[in-house]
Length: 76
Image (cartoon, rainbow, N blue to C red; front, side, top):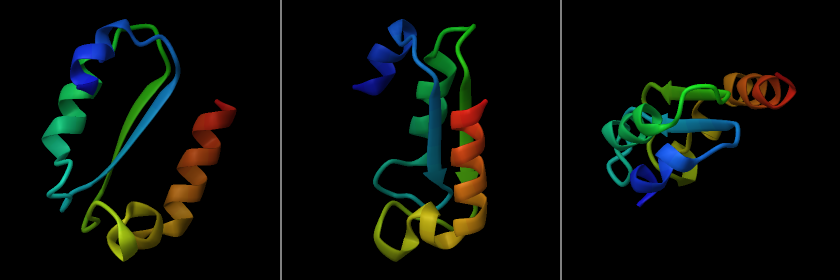
């Protein structure tokens, strides 16, 4: 239950979710994001039209955006 652990999480975190993800819906990621403490580097990134995995995974839906956001987040 990531939402239960989130308030105690103290690491940088990038949450990536597809708008069409029916396995881990966007509202779940939003709930986790909202529960994370202030003062950590956190970002919620929603990929329109992306699903949970396979060819619908955000990486495949928009590889350029995924690469730029992921690398940018790690270097931030």
